[in-house]
Length: 447
Image 1: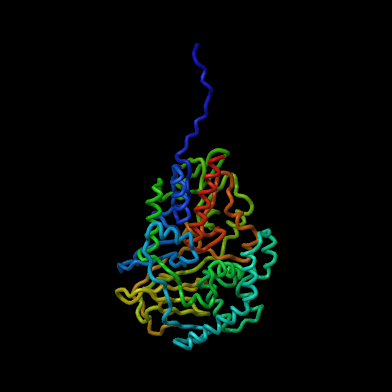
Image 2: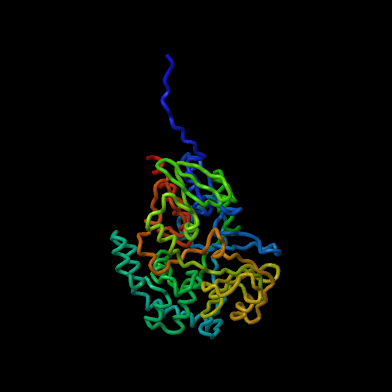
């Protein structure tokens, strides 16, 4: 009598996990999952890895520069520090300011006068914010209160920086300093950045606003690519660049990622490690939960323009800070053929990174005889695979529990610096959230 075989449904998957996004968060998640013994496919829309970090040559110069994320504080960013130590990635010395200029409301001060003026300006907002900073510090160090109760207790701080300064009667110089700081460090228009977000970052980063102008932080001697490449090699995953995902369909036991132009990857679980502003370009089936949809639709306030230039006329260790100005921060780097490598930031997007006349005019507000010989830069806000620069909280961002944006949704885990519960906006946030997403996937696969 023939043996009767029970019908068995075979699940055909390409990998245990598909990671969507090849920045730091996605690569960390992929490496951790590979170390746990799982097969992983990484889908990256661009033709390279690294996300919103990008170490590349300024065209025609032979000079390498960071087009995206650059600086960090290893003492505070312990997740990143662990990765640097793991791969023995060399670092540059901290970027310490030795020549400072302060442009406030049309008045340029340099030398000792600038240092004294900015110290007074920084002291004023620090004084006005001392109580608010202490409230935030107490909450972050606090007793595990309900997140909604925490936000309610500091709701008066979750307002635009510019409006708060006006309402609290800050002096013209103090306002100029804080607006320049918000635009350059915060990375967006101060009218639309949450003061609470800036305070949270300051408390987590263990800095005072006036101190940051003296120490810009550490950077990678061989660029962010040195760590990106090390993590990618270690992960040894199936990496597929040029593969933008347009739809993610999940069921009770499978995830399917559809790629633009055709093709798909099936897996038992997924990590969504895309910039927040790109979520709206992906069709999620079933739809995301309410908190994630609100985050995706509302977005964040990170919309900075970063200029890269080779220019002469700027001394070593130079930092210029100004408001109002097309560039709210200008800093000099290494001496290179043609001058020095210069970085500048405009949170108000009042300048184009590829317009030499604009860039030179903006630099001359700080250094009247500055001359630009070469330009670089990338517009991350119009880049379809980022649509933003680094995370900056807008008013209302804290209305939802931060964990609601990273909590698993079915068989999907979520990672990225934009949604990190701690270290948001920094490489640190991407790394920590990548670890957490890998842990979430392991729990999904175990059930």
